[in-house]
Image 1 (cartoon, rainbow, N blue to C red):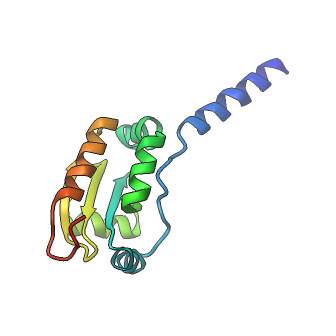
Image 2: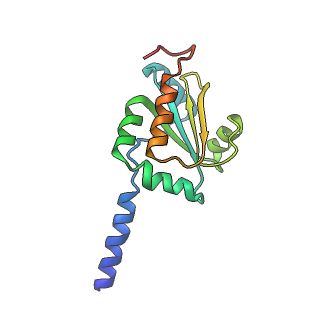
Amino acid sequence: MKKRILLLIVIFCSVSASYSQIHFEQLSWQQALGKARKENKMIFIDVYTSWCTYCRQMDSAVFSLAEVGDYHNEHFINLRYDALKADGISIRKSYTLPGVPAFLYLDPQGMVVKKTVGYQNREQLLQNSRDALSRPTNHMLIR
């Protein structure tokens, strides 16, 4: 009985530790573009696969951090797509993503502002996000 309780505690802690602090919205592509235009925000897309070790590490070690979540939730419309399913396949092909995890920073018109591929720690992801926001585009007001 004690072993079962311990196992449940370990499972609960594992699931809790990997909970994303980034609010990834469940929007269609058109809804996401509309929301980005309305709010004058860029779009951040995480393209992943369920079998990718680095994708899972991003979930547990980076997306689970409050600082990362707070920053992305304030500045971006956040989306995530499985690279091997429906919208993820078309995103991967449309934006020529060579692997996963891949991160796209798009303006409200869907144009690429920045694209990165591979695992990123907290500092790298936040720096890439700040860099994307600091690049003026023809479609956005400069912040």
